[in-house]
Amino acid sequence: MDVQGFLYNGSFNTSFPDHNLILFVDDSTDDLQFILANCFQQTIKYTLFVTTYEATTIGSFAITASGPAMIAFSKTEGPRTELQVTSNYSSSLTSNSESYTRPTTPHGSIFYYQAIEISVSVTGIYLIQSNSHLDTYGYLYDNNFNPTSPNENILLSNDDGGGNQQFLLTIVLQAVHKYILIVTTYGVGVTGTYSIVGLGSNTILFSSANRTVIQSNYSSYLTIYSQSFVRPYALTQSAYYYEAIEIRVSVTGLYGIRCHSLVNTYLSLYNTTFNPAAPYENLVYYDDTSGNSGQSTFTYEFEAMIKYILVVTTYDPGVSGLLSLDGFGDGSINFVPVNMFSECSHILNEEKFSILFLFMNLDDSSKVESMYSSSLTTNSPLFCRQGVCPQSTYFYEAIQLNVSTTGKYMFLSSSLMDTYGYLYDNDFNASFPALHKSAANDDAGTNHQFMLVVVLESMRKYILVVTTYYQNVTGSFSILCLGNDHVNYVNLQQP
Image 1 (cartoon, rainbow, N blue to C red):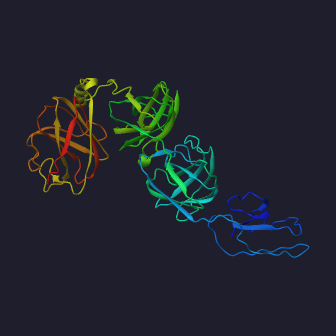
Image 2 (image 1 turned 30 degrees about the vertical axis):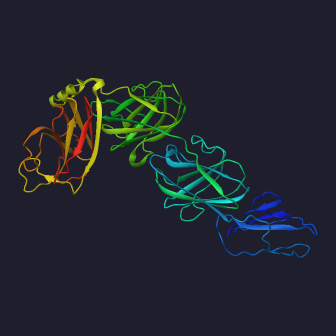
Image 3 (image 1 turned 90 degrees about the vertical axis):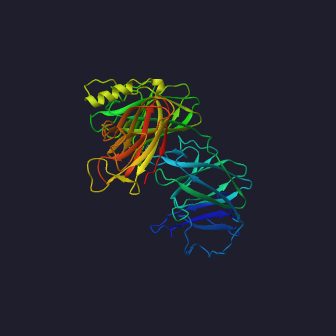
């Protein structure tokens, strides 16, 4: 074993390990053993305390002494604090938990965490251990924890001291003193349940110290009609579609922003203004894939009444798709799009020009968004979407559309599949797919996504059929509708 030796003058108390300490030695020899050299006085009592460098290590050991006279060894437990009182706390880390970059990890690495205030009424030595299927990591802070400065006020940390990838913290806690325990994980972006067991001479009081977090949301999309630029730190000079969003907060503080999309997103934050021709100017933060599944997540100290520009683009050039932003912080985040679509600076083909013209005729005030997400699986119904098929080989989902306001509506798909969209008036029969069909589209939405721009009448029944260009393809998809009013989606689950 890697052993350590502590020599005390008189008695030794585990609750106050520095009291009466004369000498401490760790690795005096190459085999990780200690050697203590001290001038001992006759008739004076000394206490030699033998322990290990690593936590919870056990094994046999021997002590050899040499000097002008014989040394009498007598094993004693000494006055010590009995760790007999057990305290418990249970909670979970979720995708809605606060997040930060924990100490000694790369910039932009995001870990979910929970802050727990702990206090005791009796000063003494306490053990705090996690119990979870997660690979946990524990940090203990003195009085206060700041996620933007995670090394500040830190007392100790541990990863696997408790065995089975659980942390174990052993420390002397002072009565009526405030400590903050941070429970997080070894891996990035991991969620799950956990429990904390405290062992000591008295009860440990656990209470959540997490802030009251206000959530804000924003949804949008990137298409071939979005503005484009060469994003910061791009590996190529190709064009990246982007949306610029003005951000303002009502309360100064630490905020987190998380982007969800089926495409690999890239976020850039600018102070006051953003110039796509100079993408490094006023850049204060950027993040590409610190979240799960290639999604961007970052935390930043926003100041109230200050204008920020968040630019949402993609990791790879020329990629489009639906996206949504979740904001978390002490106050609400106001998301205001700076640009929706760029003007046509080149000639589009006739179909796409017509779609763009129809969509741009929608007033900004009437662009109401309605989202729908689902998936095609091997349990989805099949039909023959074109020609004569020996058997039905295209998975599909039929969705009833209901609107309360007559007007123009645009439906845009977002998926890793090559999607195909059909709109039916009043009824859809999978055995006769040409019957009642009023519109169809394959790739108007770019990246092999369909885009339908149609006039829908209130109180009238429409059926949107989502399928694929190729046979026997499955996968998830989302539908964004932009129009004069909300659209109510109803999955018909046709056999």
